[in-house]
Length: 223
Image (tube, rainbow, N blue to C red; front, side, top):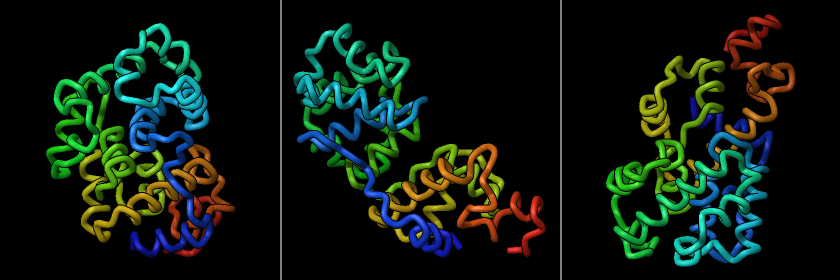
């Protein structure tokens, strides 16, 4: 079922080319983006990343040494900039103290150990950690977000909302492939932004024939 949904979304939307980066240090930029996009849109986080790139701060050593006041000003477009500055500093200090500032050392761990390592950093939760693992470390773990829970609920895959249990559904029913997990998550986000909103655009949704919400509104045929 999940693979059928993936194929339907891919046919409708096409490839999403995630994670978009603009600077030379792609891996660190993804990590910073995963932190900055918390509680805001990607467009706002992207403005903050552009500011950091302009100041050549997408660099472990330069980011470690940057003054908080400077970082706060640069990442202000992402919102909650004081809290996010602390989160960025928490991560970069952790990287230096535990892994000598080397992302390759951080990522040279099995997925479960890497995840626990990331979750030990104040300000990095499950979704952020998994985004870093999938998009920066390029290891197969499925990222769960509000879009995923909402859409899977509406199309009858599950009524489950707990992060770990939702993630298990994807892990148990899909090949553990980085490219597949990357593209599928990006497609679900696109679906959530464009169609499966809190007030859904059900009549145009590519999954409306599977959707309980659409069926109840428009008497569409059962899935």
